[in-house]
Length: 356
Image 1: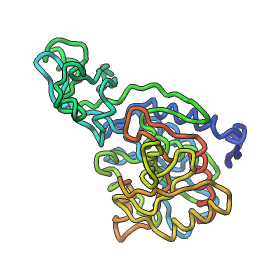
Image 2 (image 1 turned 60 degrees about the vertical axis):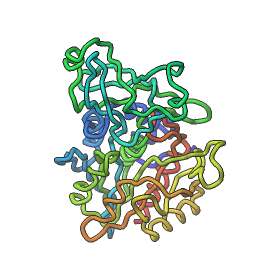
Image 3 (image 1 turned 90 degrees about the vertical axis):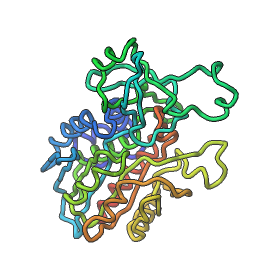
Image 4 (image 1 turned 45 degrees about the horizontal axis):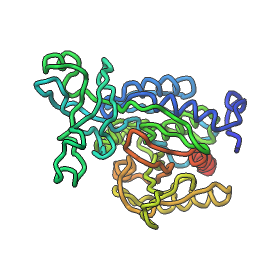
């Protein structure tokens, strides 16, 4: 296990996993569905203030931090990770007290049936349900049940009771245990992108080689919305987007459709559904990884988008690159990642900063 570069408070913890396990568990336990990132934001502000030279929260709710490093780089650089997670948003009530809902972000109908959610400021427990399988017609069994045919049961018997507990527009976060298993794996909701937030928080605690801006953005999962104000505010020359990305390394996925592999190291994408990443920076990242024996891979399937799509197009253009950890079951209540990949991302970013 590589030692963490940094100040004395971190040198005492040479096992990188111990640091990241603690931070990841705390972040993934927080509720931060798009538009309601308050818990995550408060945690990040409390963690960054002791280490940053400046921390602000903008009108959108993004956290923007600045920390002086050993030198000022030739090009202004921002590291970006989003705070929000996918979940559900309440859109109506049935007469007998069930909640009608939609996805807050891209939520696969197949993975939410039977799951529990925690809704609103009152933290109301709800269970997502539908007709039992033996009540379905033969035709209904041919396709997965859609969200519009599901409901959330909060244990009341009337619309009036439901309204007292839950308001329209309240969001619900998945209520899943965080588990470590196997050889350095973690299962949790919201690893996308609490992983990126965790990496940025650990970086901001270190003695940085250069001045750095940090952007913890909101509403990424519903259209990269927080990134617009964050990109204009920070006005960087270079943006490095730190993310969790889709791994489909299952037996049923042939060849390139596996996209990337959990345990295969840091993911350095050349393109996704929103961005063709800066070739010069991508080459620099891969070269640094090769020179320092940091495992890395790229994505073999073009899909999805990140805050990089916004940063790249802001003002007169920003040189943008991405670096990510491969995550199975993305946008589900049970995402799966591996600490060795997260370590690779952290170390690669730190070495990249040393060469800026």
